[in-house]
Amino acid sequence: MNRKLRMGMVGGGRGAFIGQVHRMAANLDGKIELVAGAFSSDPEKSRLSGEDFFLDPDRVYGSYEEMAKAEAAREDGIDFVSIVVQNHLHFAVAKTFLEAGINVICDKPLTVDLEQAKELKKIVDESGLVFALTHNYTGYPMVKEARRMVKDGELGRLLKIVAEYPQGYAVGDVEGERSGAISNWRADPKIAGKSNCMGDIGTHAHNLTKYITGLEVEELAAELTAFIPGRELDDDGNCLVRFTDGVKGIIYASQISNGDENDLTIRIYGTKASIEWHQEDPNELIVKYANAPRQTYRRGNDYLGEAAQANTRTPFAHPEGFIEAFANVYLAAAEAIVDQIDGNPAPDCGYDFPTVDDGVAGVAFIQACVDSSSNNAAWTKLDL
Image 1: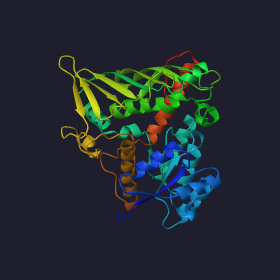
Image 2: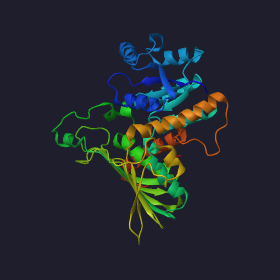
Image 3: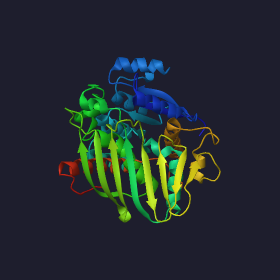
Image 4: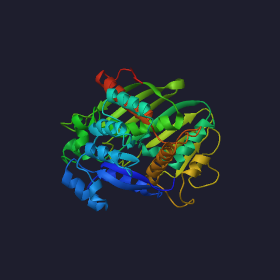
């Protein structure tokens, strides 16, 4: 391919944190160019956002429906759309662009309920188009090294997984000290879906276990709690988990864990060795043994596996982080989109980005958490 991929964006206009993250990640490797967008449901805000990004005014739209129709009709139309709108719009926007023949990169969660998720998977499968879900933590090199170690049997038979995602930014609201600190759309079930905390960050912990180990959650026992007075949706969640292959585990997420910032962590225990990775210190992977000193593997070194090295941009001792991991997801999706445009078959090993199947699994996880919690933490199977 002798040009950059043409990217469109729905949502992510002025003042939107995650939209800026997506744009930086897409731009990092110089293979993608933002050329069009419907950046807000407010046409004027969308227009002003287009000016911020120096786009052709004719390709800045007042609605995503208008954008999909216009871009699909252009000879130089977008190659894919990046969807960074609120949760309740993911399904409708993705469906509209897929039906217009346009590849999709979508923020998580896939949809707000399992019925929509399964319907969207069917649309994706029938379309033959690329669909990537931005579970960005899969993009870290040392996460990819952890995945390789599990796949190559270096941990032995897996026994237990503990995945956690504690944040503490909302704890002040529990006692009313910072009233309204998180009174945003994620607290509204009409917009966010059936869960706030587990739906927003707990799904990252779930996805990380799935990506690294390849195991599915078979059933879980969950308790979701809203510690903040007046909240309809959870700000804390705890799950006992039964994975495939008899592996046991714990997944928990919290927004009221006082003093924690963004401490996504995973520990995987095997019969030969165990591994531990912390998102707040992402360039290291800790490897532990029963009868030997623990080791620390570091990003950027040539003793790491192929995937970790291929997803590393700077030499060792030069830290990489959140944006680079996000960019690795975009780069892998771009590879698939280029192959799709050029008519090339997918590689035998496939592409290294989260798919619509991962999205369905994530929504099934949320639904099982909600169902279990409403039934006094009863064991509940995932409907996959």
